[in-house]
Image 1 (tube, rainbow, N blue to C red):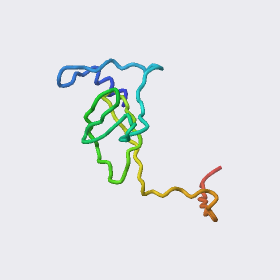
Image 2: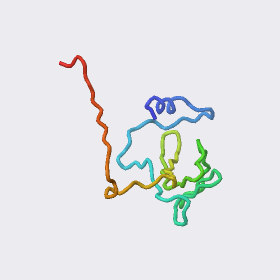
Image 3: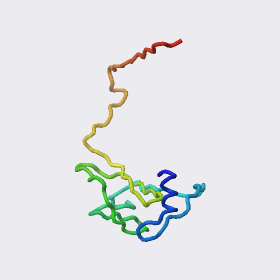
Image 4: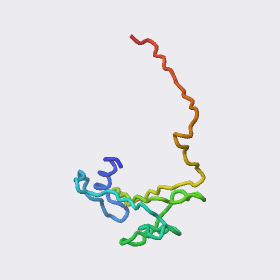
Length: 123
């Protein structure tokens, strides 16, 4: 988020008359994000369902998905990020229909493409 938006949130009150905190530099110990490596598995710390994100040892949080998670995709990881205007979650998803890459031993031939650049008026 830009510096301009931070100053405006501090100087101009919102609809309820509240103002944001004064912009300040980040300290070395400030934690802005944390990641849960598993989602929706039995030992996971995060479970997503019906617009509710359940975080272990924290609470249930209502979530607004800006786009639906496609069918056939699995949520692998969730990163919770704190920004000046609220908390956000970013999901890493996996598609099982993508084939695994071939091992280097099984590749018999390769094709290389070289693109030449010509610079005009170069002295």
